[in-house]
Image 1 (cartoon, rainbow, N blue to C red):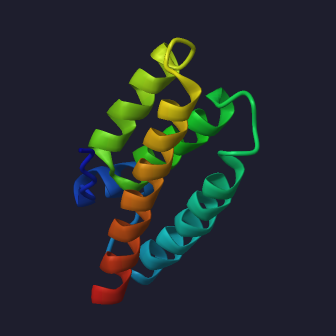
Image 2: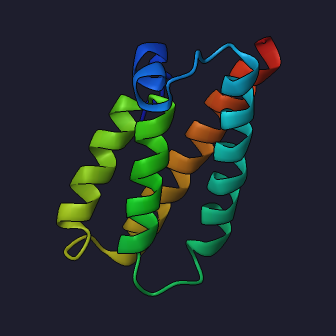
Amino acid sequence: MISCHINEKAFYSTTGVEFRSLLGIKFCSIAIRNLESIKEEIGEVIEHSPLIHKLKGIASSCGFIEAECLCKKLEGYGDIIKPNILIKTLDELIVLMLMALKSNIEVI
C-alpha cells in the first residue's frame, strides 16, 4: 500500500510559502487541477515517462516525500513494469495525493 503524507517543511522549502497560508491553498488548488489532468491522461497515453515526471514534480513541490521517491523508482524501472501495473500504481498514487491535498485544504 502506498502512503501519502504532506511534509509541510518540504512544501515550504520547494514553494517558499507556508502550507496553511492563502498562497499555500492556492498552490494546492493548482496541484489538484494538475493531478486531475494527469489522472485523465494515464489510460490514454502509450509512453508514461512524461506523466511520471510531472507527477514527481508535483509530489516534490507539495511535500509528498514518499510519492516523490516512488516516482523516481517508476522513472527508473518504468520500462520493465507491466503497463497495467504501472497504470494502477500511478492511479492509486494520484488518488491518494488528491485525497491528502483536498482534506488538508478543507481543514484550513
